[in-house]
Each structure stands twice: as C-alpha cells, then as structure tokens.
Image 1: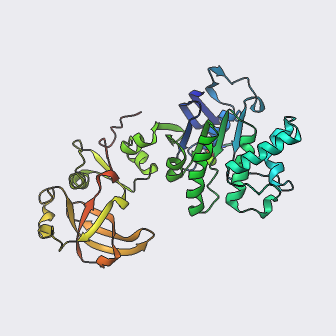
Image 2: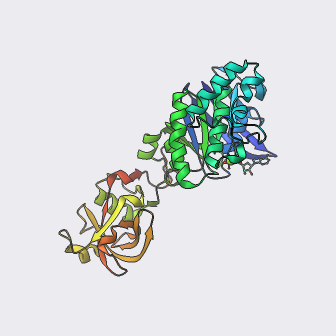
Image 3: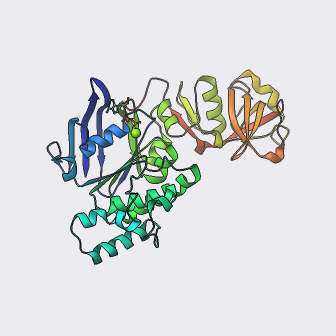
Amino acid sequence: MLELTDVTVAFDGAVAVDGVDLAVADGDVLAVLGPSGCGKSTLLRAVAGLEPAVGTIAWDGVDLAGTPTHRRGFALMFQDGQLFDHLTVARNVGYALRLRGADRRTVRREVDDLLELVGLGGYAERLPRTLSGGERQRVALARSLAARPRLLLLDEPLSALDASLRVRLAADLRRILTEAGTTALFVTHDQSEAFAVADRIAVMRGGRVVQEGPAAELWRAPVDAPAARSLGYSVVLDGDAATLVARAASVPLEPGGQLAVRSSGIRALPADGADGGGAANGAGGVVGVGGGSLPGTVRSVRLGPDGLRLDVDVDGAGRLAALADAATEPAPGDRVRLHVDAGACAALPPRGAGRWT
Ligand code: ADP
Ligand code: MG
C-alpha cells in the first residue's frame, strides 16, 4: 500500500503541499478533492517522484526517497491523455507491453482485453485523431493499465470532457478500476466526480488535507463550512437561519452550530396548501415553525436543469434557494412553504470549532 507521512513540497519557499498524511490500501481508489491551486497535482507528482518532497512516501513500508520515477512501478494519467498521434489505438495501448519485450501474440491478446475493458472493442486500428475526447481518455486509461502499475495516479482525467460525458465516464472509470483491481490515487476539483469514482475522499485546501474518510462519512459530517462547500453543499447557514432550517428538516443541531444544505433538497410548495395558514406568523423568528416547513416569499424564479429554481426570502431565516414544480406556477411575491429534506443537510460544529485539525 501507499503511505504518505508528513509530506511537504515547497517551490522557492512557497509551500504547495503542507504536511500531508495519507494512505491508500491495495485495491482502493482514493480521490483527493480540492479547488484549483490547492496542491493536488504537486502531491501527485511528488508521489510519482517528479517533485522533490520532504517527509516519507512509502510503498509496502519501503521508503521511495531513493527510487527514481521509472522504478516506482506507478503510472500517471493526465487531463489530456497524451496519446501518440501517429500510432493506432492498439499500438498506443500496447506500448508498455512491447517495451517490456512481450511477444506479438501476447501483446495482441492483452490489448484486446484492455480495449474490451474500457469499452472500445473494435477500435484497435483507429488513429487517435479519429476519436472523441471521451474515447481518447479511454485509450489513455487502457494504455496506463497495460503497464500493470502497482499504483495508478490520475490527474483530473475527465476534466477536459463535457459535463454529461464526464458523468458517464466517471462511472465507467470506477467499474474499470474495480474490475482491474487497480490501486489508484485520483485528484479532481469536481465533487461529483470524486463521489462517482472513489470509495474514500481526502478534502484538500491550501496544501493540507483537512478531512479524509469514506465518501459517505464525509458527506454526512463535513468538518467545516469550506469542506462542506467542496463536497457539494450549496450553502452553509448559521445563526437563526441554521436553527430554523435544521428544525424544519428535523436535523439535530448543537447550540451555535452551522447547517450545510444542498438546494436540491429544498422544495417550495404553494403556501395555500393543506399545511398553509400560519405563513404570515412565522416572521417572529424561531416560533411558528414547529418542524416540517418554512414559510417565505418568492423573490425570483428561473428555469434550471432540474426544474424551477426559486430565490425565497424565508421568514426569519433570510434568502434560500429552492426547487419548485413548474406546475405550481410560482411567481415573485407569492407566499410559499419550503420543505427541507434531512438527507440534504449536514450539521456542522459552530464556526471555528472544527472536529478535525
Ligand atoms: P492543483 O493541481 O490543485 O490545481 P498545483 O499542485 O498545480 O495545484 O499547484 C499548487 C501551488 O503550487 C500553486 O500555487 C502553484 O502555483 C504552485 N506550483 C505548482 N507547480 C509549481 C512550480 N513548478 N513552480 C512554482 N510553483 C508551482
Ligand atoms: Mg492540477
């Protein structure tokens, strides 16, 4: 397995990776998730031996400090797969095998198996320039796997693709890595990609890993507000807003705690429904919202990919984004009630009191 202990990389005194501890067990896929510039590529390059690092990078307990890149048995795959444009798909994929001196029949068989694995059976004789972006990345992945790396390092391999393809390829990537039993370290700035591909996620910020664990655990309990945002929560509420929304969603919140909410988990219904009535009484703050729903006034309405997106002035809680069914025909000024799905909320500790350091 891969084990990083207190790994630091600095460029002319500027620290890009700051005291990172991480482990990837055999056969596991770990996603490192963080915004652009937080040090993800630098961390990956340090693991590959392409960037001098302080601290320990070890494989199966053996410190790799003295092992050059080509002896580490790791493969790297980038955003643009960097295929050899003049070679066919088969020759691209078989490159490492030929380099190792495998005979033609073996190369052919393994290349066919790998192309099958990445969903490109029948593409062997195509040239890279005749492929779509997604197909090229599949070829690049097959080529990386052909080297039978003991660790595959993936640097935002899907980020050059368009959104719908990214989602599909992320799911495929997970299946391919699992079927091939590959141990992988995958870095990305895209939270949905991280969740789609990896079992474990490390959240990185300013060169540091601020939280690491099974994806579901991180989703349930982000360590602080910035971590919640990188994990895909749309807003982090505090004060009365947090209290009111947590109560409406029946999510326990410690005194002074913050609440992370995904706006896709908030739905607006017309206030004149069966549970309407008391809408106007909610303005007093905490009273008047005995769990269930939050009264408010629609400020704006626009069409989004998942339905109508409303901006709602919630009584006593300020602005919140919510989704609505087009059939309810909401308009600015309308009174609505917001229903908050507990599964779309995570209770956070009070500001400045992170559980993780
Ligand atoms: P990410 O991959 O998360 O976007 P990087 O690892 O590329 O982030 O960069 C982290 C920080 O290190 C950035 O501030 C970047 O400017 C800096 N950096 C990366 N590579 C170099 C380099 N070769 N020389 C100087 N600074 C670098
Ligand atoms: Mg990068």
